[in-house]
Length: 413
Ligand code: HEM
Figure 1 (cartoon, rainbow, N blue to C red):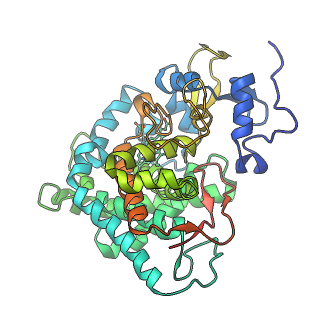
Figure 2 (cartoon, rainbow, N blue to C red):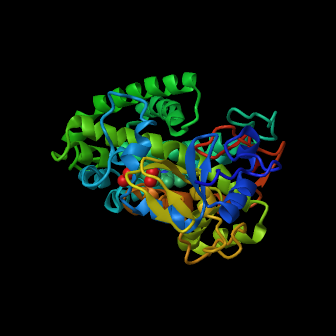
């Protein structure tokens, strides 16, 4: 076997503190020079070419169950779709569609619109409050007239939309949002021991929170106003523990990536007037296309883990059996073999076979919801606030790896 190739010294490892700020030069080098790369630092195989990532996500020789095992942070938590392989996976995923499949989303479409209107109305109130105070507030909401992309847009969006899925009464929403935030640390495979322990505790609390609401939700599942969560909880194909596993996965996998997608999107859009105008005036179809393109360029979940069950020959090389593999979809999504002008924003790009939602059997079940809610938010925001612009200190990329996200992104409205 030849010695593993190493990144040239001038390129920061994509998982290092410097590389996390801008992983794309390292991704490019890997894709061009060693697309099936054994990384001595993480002792994992890194796939960076689109064809190889797409294959790994679709091929049963790459086990998601084994890949996710080391990331499951709560031993008492039952398996969910993401931690199982076929055929067990399909047994869980089919009922999971009751919670977030296209029919579930259609059923709460008016509620989603109402939540987005409420988020946008909230900005109007803030704008009316007069000039900004100290806008450089990296940890939360900014002052009047100024907003912080995640605190004032992304998080209220994600909370409102998920609250509709779960049919939560307004009184439960603040506690839910706090738990959703705390469990999100479980997304980051390189979170430290202390953060991981906190994530484990939060997961237990979230599961209890949802469990306490499951019976009531199931009892009203088929009444007017019944929630998608109620229909999941009433489905007798699943045990209660499995229902809660799926529900908790939805919160861990959905809340933070949806919340952070907004800032990532605005970071790209606001300096590009033509692109913003297209979304402002193009209707929901263009806005949804833009959501896909923005996720391609800045994928909140930049990689996902698998373990090979046998040796696999890829275009870029051979991976042995039992290997830990990361499909770096953030790199694959800028592969020039598939995308013309891969580092450019083209809001009407079509086709756009990006892998930001994964691919194959584990393709993100929340994708229709993300497209609909993200499209409505972006077009509504740009339409109602044509003067929206970055203000204050430039934002920085957060040190965590998953989700890829900005901090301290202040905007003037
Ligand atoms: C921008 C936001 C989001 C992104 C980028 C994203 C990305 C992904 C990716 C890459 C996967 C596949 C993981 C793998 O193959 O290992 C996935 C799976 C999943 N996502 Fe999302 N997601 C987002 C939002 C959501 C939301 C809002 C929900 C729920 C409401 C959700 C629910 C799920 C579920 C349940 C799975 C597991 C599907 C399965 O294993 O069969 N996601 N997501």
